[in-house]
Length: 357
Image (cartoon, rainbow, N blue to C red; front, side, top):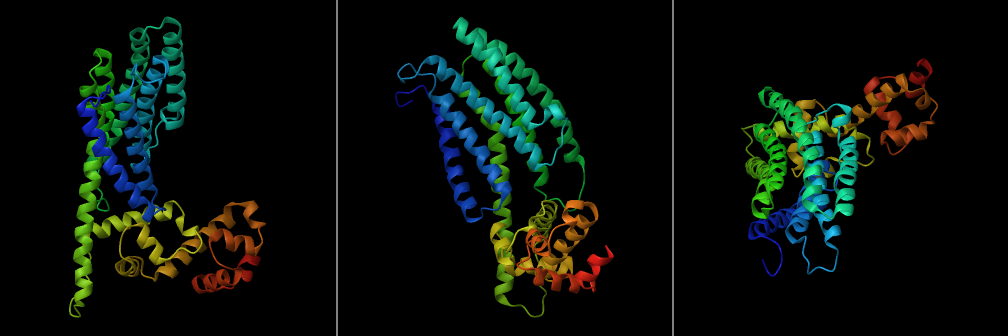
């Protein structure tokens, strides 16, 4: 296509992914603390890179040796596959066996690629021979991951939890399709060079993941618009009815917020958190007030103080910190602010507490 080796199917897939990548980049730049969005952005970028390399290379018209071009092509596919597995690990909080984690997998695939593909290809100059050796190893690994992660994802799919969004199961299915597409693509490459078919299969799982993200995003924006409309109308006789699915999603974000100890970040505010979560500060405050039973400031301070007490109990090195260092690590602007917040929660002066502990 256009005088290159790229198949029209690869081109169409690439255009779609570039558009999604651009939209996600703008979305992330407006909310740079959204780690999940960043991982999704990187995932799309790795597939865009893979599709560009797989579509254009190898090409004898490009002033680069065919040997290097083939290494780049297969290397791009490896990076995309490994990052997809890492993405599934993190998004679904899967903790696999040590040798199945992303970093060991990267080492295994890197060494396998060098030993079973690059070196044989360099000495034999036989691409098909080297490809079969490497893809046999890659297929075995992909089957291991498909069985292992597939069983974990199946358990997540069957597990019923009220806190989870109704789109959680859709994302589980999309994650499994991503794993399945890797295995299917490897089998297709072993059978022959069919770029259109290979890229369709490889990108099928990512397309499913992108689709679930878009559907979830649209649904949340509709629910948010409904809540904002009620706020604007100022219905005095009716309490603010937050959309159930949206509230559940926000509560999940608060759960992750606490697990990741993001409350230790200095100068965190209700407005900045609402911006990062692409929501409205007014009903984010409403959720904290009704579900946590306190103001946002009190909620953050209480988390910091609980963290302080736990660190004081378990971390000998932490006990030797100065008050300034402790306040700074907890995210307070000064020791005085920390002391006031501590007294408000514990009803005991900070110095007295430290003497007793």
